[in-house]
Image 1 (cartoon, each protein chain N blue to C red):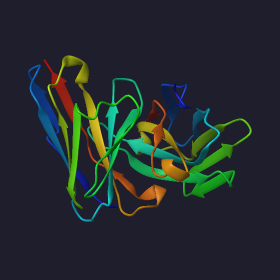
Image 2: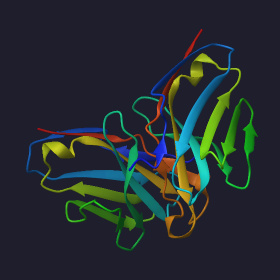
Image 3: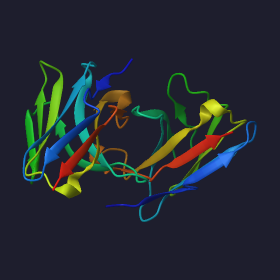
Length: 114
Length: 117
């Protein structure tokens, strides 16, 4: 049962344009969501997160939007840069005994062309 | 950010042998470490959570006798794949948490590629 889904395996964007990566979840107990970036042969690195009490969080070029009713979140990168090319994972976690346990999506490969 | 290392980065072993993977937090003390497994084109799946000095908590479907986890110190956790079989071939990633809380304070190692022949 895939509780966190990233339905787009890959995304290709021109440098300077906006990249939009999408993520859907099914578990209504999730209350905190994170985006990670992963380069080949490296572990994921934290990018940005959002609590379920918010619908938007912005950090520089990165903005995460959360639509709780649709159980959908998205990561916007603007402007996109070639160095942003990597695999992006969304992850979710719930409170209580599941605190800190991350459920990941399958990842989306972002390629930003110069 | 904090650095987490894994050793080895890549290992090939024969079926039936045991393989130990180390996860170290290099510049901080990790009260909690997590072990994940990633199959090709799939997401990272949490295998177990380990707290220093106590037994690991395994996720449903993960055999604790097959995947032995030891978290003997605040900077080191080990995962031993016992009697490895080809289906255990996967990418194993650990993460270490700075404190008992803080979602954004979970730092990942670079991963270990295990291939069982």
